[in-house]
Length: 349
Image (cartoon, rainbow, N blue to C red; front, side, top):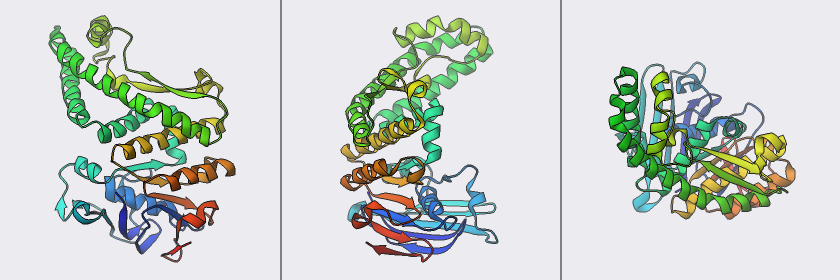
C-alpha cells in the first residue's frame, strides 16, 4: 500500500504543501529546520493520529495558526482510501474516507507505517515496552487472531489485577483464562521469532555487521507452563497487587557473538543491529502481504556512509514505499524521487 497524494497545512514549519510521492523510494531534501521531519510527522498524524515527536499534536500547530490539517490518499482502485487528520487548539478530527474513525485499528489495517529514527533506535535498545510494541506491530499484520487474543488476555489480566488488589484470593479464578490466552500469545511470539531470525541476520550482514547476531525470545515467564508460573508468583503478586508473569512481560534480547548486545556492542554496532531488526519487521510484514510505508529520519546520524548505501540498497530492493530525510541528494538519487522541502515541489532524479 503506497501513499499517492499528501496535503499539509500549518504543521510546524510547513505552511501549505502538496506532494504526489513515488511508489518506491522518496528522498526528502532540505536545510536544517526546513520541515523534513515535519513532513514525516504529517504522515504519522494522518495514518496513526500520533505525533512523531514527544507531546500532543496540539503542539505541532504552526505558530500563529489556529489548526493543522493533513490529508493523504493511498492505494489504488478497490484498495484506495483517504485519511484526513485535523487538529485545532481544542478539537480534533480523524477521518477515513470521510467517516469519523471510531477505532485506530481500522486505519492501522489499511495503511501500515513503520518509523526509523535516532529516537526509535535508542528506545528499542533501552525500553522493553518499545520492543514489545514493535513485535505486536508485526503480529497485528501477520497473525489474523493476534488482536482478538491480545484483547482477551488484557481483559483477563485487568480482572486478575483488580482481584489481587481486593485480596481474599479471588484472583485465582482468573488463572486458567490468563494461562490459556497467554500461552497462545507466546506461540504467536515464537512464530514471529522464527519469521524474523533469518532476514534479521541476513540484513545485519548486508549492513556490514562483522559479528554473528541473533534475537532471543523471553516469553515473560520461566520454562514451566504459564499456569504453573502464576501459581509460583502468587505470594509476590499478592504483595505487589499486580501480575508479574505473562506475555505482557515478554521481551526480545539481541545477542552479538553469544553475548548481550548492550554489553559488548559498540554504539555503531548497536545502531546496525536495531536498523537490521526493524528492516526485518518491515520485510516480514511485506512477505505476509502487508507492505508498510517506511519513514526514515536522519539516517546519517545512525549509520556511516558505507552502511547508509547498503541501507538504501535494501530499501530500493524492497517492495515498500519509503520516505527518507537528508540534507543533500545522496547516493540513491539515481533510483529515488527527490522532494525539496524549501521549494515545496518534487523532482524525479
